[in-house]
Length: 292
Image 1: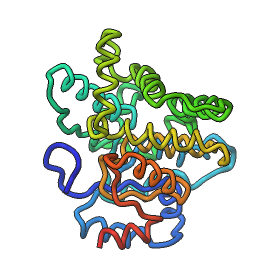
Image 2 (image 1 turned 90 degrees about the horizontal axis):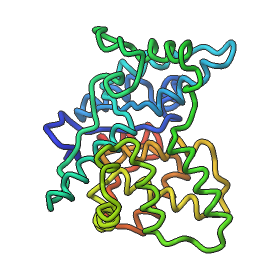
Image 3 (image 1 turned 30 degrees about the horizontal axis):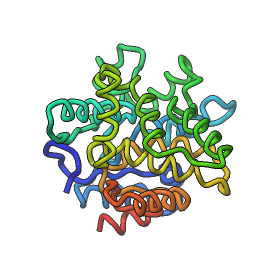
């Protein structure tokens, strides 16, 4: 029951960075147990640039080791790669095409066999037969240390949005916020940037009518608003990575999220029933149970 276009070999599984770290530390089910569960279900673990940023962030600190070993252990599992902004660009490009053609968007496939196929890098890595995640992290440490642990541009915009929403005693209309978010997304979607002002207004309304027309963007936006408008819950820097992963979440079948993020996703789903949400589990123990 894959949610992406094409003939995917099995289920896509997205784990929270916390669970990947625990897997490397042998907290909970062992790597072998998770590997067996994935193989039995013909499932693949989805690894993204956000994961790499968060797992490799300690490399910028002195006397921190174990990152390479953790990344090497992850690569022992059945794994596929995706980059969140690339996924968003594919999704919105297809939505614009369908809008102009008067049809419905076809599925997009954001998954690749190597992370450097969708990640800007040094430019020459794709000629390598294999470019390990540990090598990629090391290269980032030496050439782009500012990227390690750094939230995405959209994550920074989320923080600004949350701050503005919480200071405003009256929430703005959802269409206004939705439209503004689409404007921000134009940087990763050339087709979106080329819409005329009038086309953009109609496209915004058309896109919001059905969450499935941009599944990742829709889930991200509704969860983002749930967090931003909950003034009683302090905004956390860790929210940035969790929210960025939401662009990939609808293209998976099973995913682990921490309790707080599951709460917000659940509220967003209750508010908008046509949001595409996979089966959510607490941790790798829940993952094994779900795959069984």
